[in-house]
Each structure stands twice: as structure tokens, then as C-alpha cells.
Length: 77
Image 1 (cartoon, rainbow, N blue to C red):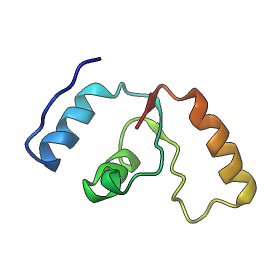
Image 2: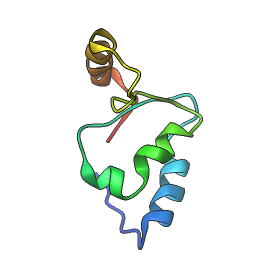
Image 3: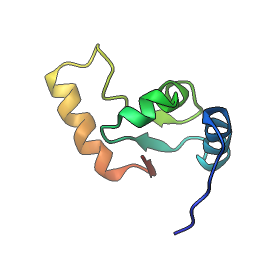
């Protein structure tokens, strides 16, 4: 595993854009840090499919399905 230090949130978002392949299925765990750094909003705007468990339009069944799909994502944060 390789680690990288990035100086700030904008640098983080640029690097994520470089690392996440277009068309990938992307999921996240529960993280206040991802929200605070703007990663969740960034993932919502990308060229990938983001499994956004914070989407208020999800009903109980859709949220359950999303949680299951999180186990088969290409990228997970």
C-alpha cells in the first residue's frame, strides 16, 4: 500500500480525480472527514457511479440495496 500526503482539500480532490477511473462504481463508509473535505460533493459530480447513501430520495429498500452494492465497488473510501 502506498501513502500520499496532500497539503489541502483542493489538492486531495484533484488527486482523487486522477485516481478514480471513469465509469467506476464508487462507494463510501460513514465518514465526517469525507464530508468536511468536500469529497462527497466531489464524488456526486464525477464521471463514475457514486453510491450516495446520503441521498434523501432513497427509501429503505433502495438504501439497503445500496449498502449491499458497496461490497462490490471498484473504489471504496
